[in-house]
Length: 423
Image (cartoon, rainbow, N blue to C red; front, side):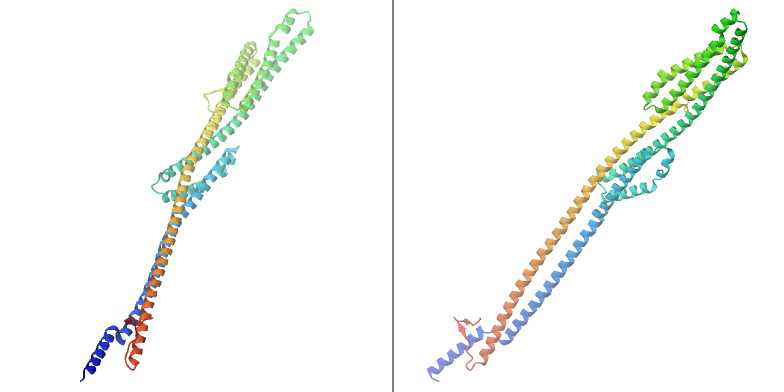
């Protein structure tokens, strides 16, 4: 073998060895494509699972937040509306109670069972939703105060109507007694006038009888008529004063009437009765009538002005004013309790609004987190897909290049700057 043949053989061997080092086999290129396809499939599956997990996470978080909002915010908001509506109904009932003028008008308002049950139920729901807070703890006490003040107000107005009815009945009885007293006084006046007419007739028959003249002018018959007439006037005045007791606007007015007018009237009437009894002491019929008149008058005064007697007119009127004052105080207490209840309800309402706003913020945060994760997963998946597609393209080109090189006559491999050709 000549030197030129040896050099050509070694050059051919080096070229073949270089081709073997720089170009993988066709089986290796086919395996790279398969691996890249598997990578692409795995990437798609991972993206699908990640997006599914993200959707499940979003559904779970949003569902829990919606349930919490419905349980905490919406239910408590409904309870707030129900409590405010119950309190409003309670105050409408109180306004109707205060506007009544007779006990019969209170009968339709006596039963508040449904209203009380609704208020206690809704307030308990509201307090349970905000357990642990100061306002929720005080809410039950405020409801109890409002209901207790409402019941006390109803009882006070009912008692006031009962006192008014008793006063009117007593007024009718006293009017009857005063009428009887006036009739008895007129009877005494009639007897005295009849005796006086007899004296005048005797004087007419005996004009010169000086004793008869003195009896007619200065005698007891004229004094009896004058006293009986004065008694009628004082008793009529007493009836007017009794009417003023019923029309008195305040307790002070009642006390003024009792001290300044009725007391003086009673004193004057009793003085006249004493004088009349002394004048008719010698006449049995007149004396009996006068004593009966005194008893009737004393019984009438007992029903009018005896402060120790609960059923007397002055005691009933003072008790009526006391109940009116108590009703005003109870109304004020009810307003204070309702104000405290409103303050606590307002505080709970603010807390409910804050919870609702917090739930909305958490929901928005979950939505934005989901969007961010979705974008990141999408970008990452697209990047991996692009990477896998690039590798598949490279592997495919290499495989095509090797196949073309094997089919060429001389087995040469195209090169560019000493590297395998890749486009």
